[in-house]
Image (cartoon, rainbow, N blue to C red):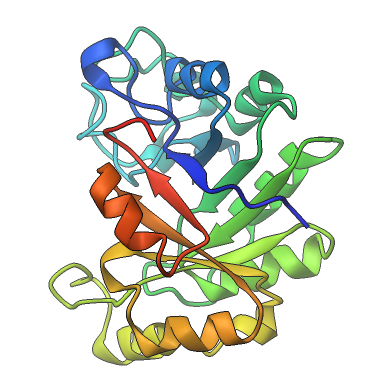
Length: 246
């Protein structure tokens, strides 16, 4: 089981004003320098390589446009992150950088579109990249099918579910039935989740209390101030933070 820390740098210790875009090599180095655990996100390149990048499209974070999955890993590596000096790193590159120095929390982004069963290739790419990695690492996803696939392929890999209140205003791409189901968190036992990482603003949901009663750990996302951290830690065991230094 991974040692789930109290403070986890969200998309690494990023600050674009200081040349450290989210999920960048510079942000990874900054988190390592301060000894913070690191959360990163994974999207697929067109050739199946696991890339460390949050969005499904390039537009917000780079000067390029279109889906991440429409470009090869080499192309993405040459696509400079806005506000930084480097391109998009692969998961393998980030693992080599971290090299077990701090715990690493990997969120596999949904590729189905409706949090459904159309999963597998990206999860397999993550498992392949992790082969032989000796550091503390855990994986998670909003999509329970993704976590179930990870459990089947790598049963010893610590894993959890990323969870939320699934407010329709924030999740318009999901149908109401899907939002209701995910909000109820019925898949914890099925996927062997050892923790959840829950929306910080919704930690008072009764479902979170039920998760705690099972003995599972509670992380949360995203905390942006020391005041918000203190509030979150009344319920959560750890916070994924950005925008301040704990």
